Length: 317
Image (cartoon, rainbow, N blue to C red; front, side, top):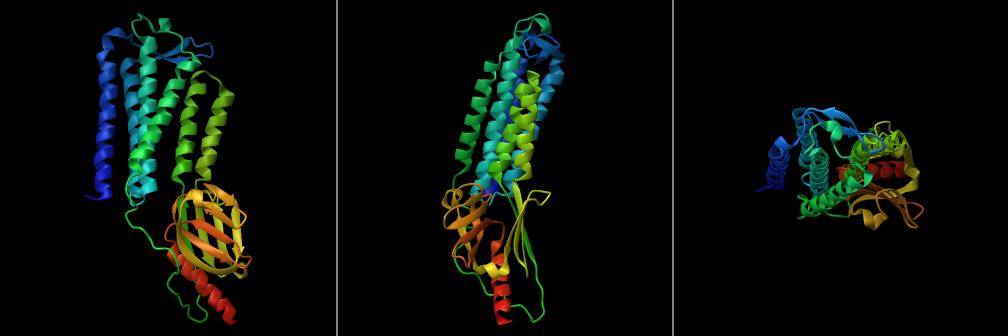
């Protein structure tokens, strides 16, 4: 059984189990709940909005299915890498704990009241266990998904020689995304639900903006051409880090994890610089200054081959 098959089987079963738990839990206490139910609370904690029982249940189920689909798609696309499988499992674990936890909180404050206006107040502290459960669920998901090696481990070291014909020009472009930054960005957006329910708009905007910023910087695009290596971030391709060809001694491919190069994101150490958005294969540039520049990127072999070919062509002029 392949990683893809095992992941699809496990994540599919988990998605159905959580949806069944949401449905069974709500229906089990249906006769003890008002209809409509209190679904929104003001800053004071008192209920100030309601939703029909069926509509609220459908909203919870749809919310969970959207989270599950995002996690499953992310996992399937990167199933060959252990880090991607772990991140997808973390999304499924944290998302399930959050949706189920919020459902339990909403149901508990509506229990055994005749009218939604009589629902119990919703103090802020009651949401904290939900966030803690989501964090624990995400950690457990990461731990369970972080099993086994990458499906196609790559060897480190020198790359094959690429020869350019006289006058030939070539460009190599690749990209990479950070599962970690995507997860943190998603959690930030989810956390915005809490201040939004309490109508604390400044905190809501802060969480949403933080999540969007992480999403925007969670990807990078790398281009190699006769001018050197250019790495840009996000859909706007800003900011840009440029390394001129004359600054590069040679290029190779190495497998590195974030802790080996200083952590996630853009890292500067005494002997190296890194753009690390995921662990695994990296394009490694050995600079004339003696430093190394690590860029985690998909299919770095061809990029390293082209860098070396351009350096050889430049030295022959």
